[in-house]
Image 1 (cartoon, one colour):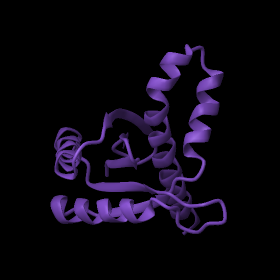
Image 2 (cartoon, rainbow, N blue to C red):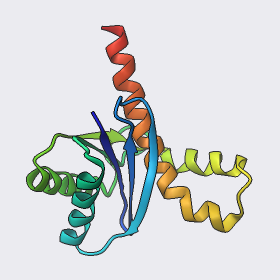
Image 3 (cartoon, one colour):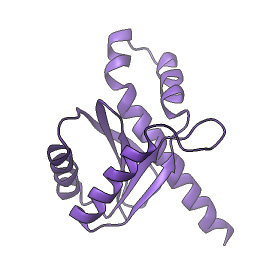
Image 4 (cartoon, rainbow, N blue to C red):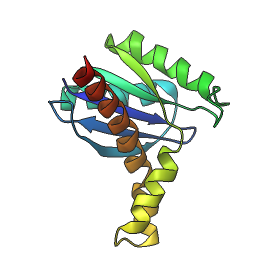
Length: 142
């Protein structure tokens, strides 16, 4: 099953996609957010283009595990996705995904400008990869 990961920020929305076997994630694009219907159109286009069958949306949490200040906005987006796409949606703790993306990109031979351009896409891939790893580990333990 192919999954679409979404890192839904206040200004940008980044998308990641799993392979068909649900083992590997890769970032596919980052877009500037606009109005809600246009954001949903972008997500719908990705579903159509890549054949995604499930969504994983990053849920902002504070370091103590409580919901972050923008969690309400994310949950509203999750409901809109469910209502429009009629596909299952899970949320996943996105704590430190951007920090991890920046750390990994610092290790790559990229210019500062290039790192800035791809950091959100990498963060979306890290978010989705964490979800995939958890699900695959859980399956192995069963």
